[in-house]
Length: 252
Ligand code: IPE
Ligand code: IPE
Ligand code: MG
Image 1 (cartoon, rainbow, N blue to C red):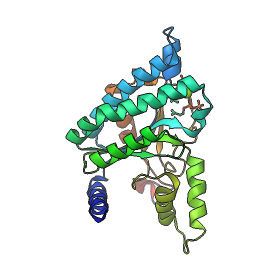
Image 2: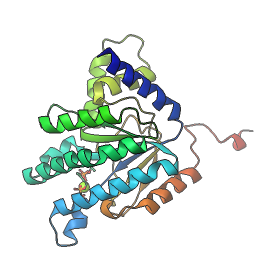
Image 3: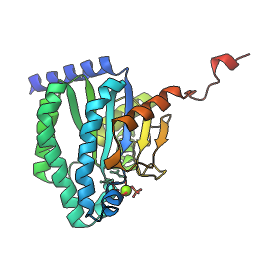
């Protein structure tokens, strides 16, 4: 027990040492429409979407990304037909089973954010196995959001905050990680990408994206490739982030 918490502590420390890279978050949207346009069932699009995840995870470190948060299943996605939900859950478990070894080899640390109490026990077990096995990875922190709702996370953190004196933004961020959605600490989002053509956040990382640069693309998620990710990062690097201040050159 002590050994495993020490293990996690060291992994956190190592993670913070590499956290100077980019935190990119992606709302992976458009799987269903991609499949429908091909006359196939929606799940066909979700399967193709899993291949996009593999490509993006593999390419992320070479683009300077050290934290990647992927929106895989929102708390509102429970409203979908049971067959689609079941298929999505099966795909998530399959992803963890097939990718864990590769992630260990490539230094990718996986953590899952979101509620776990509504997930099937075998999925929770797979998540825990993967998180433990990939914990030492320091090349990339891959966070997968499953049964995730940003507003619910903020609410849970707010409830924990009532017992916290001298609350500040940093402390609230810590509460959000610990009580809101689990997982380990991650920096604020630098670049938020949404595929599939919609221009909305759909309850994703609302607190963490306060100053994120937003990038929307019409590309459906199964068609999103390494070149698209590189183009989004290039555009991000060309933007000027001001955080409410005035650019140095304009100060008179
Ligand atoms: C995103 O694709 C994946 C999940 C929400 C699980 P969608 O399934 O929302 O695809 P569209 O938006 O219907 O095309
Ligand atoms: C957001 O996509 C959730 C995920 C990508 C997992 P949705 O397709 O569920 O979002 P809305 O319903 O179009 O806002
Ligand atoms: Mg959608």
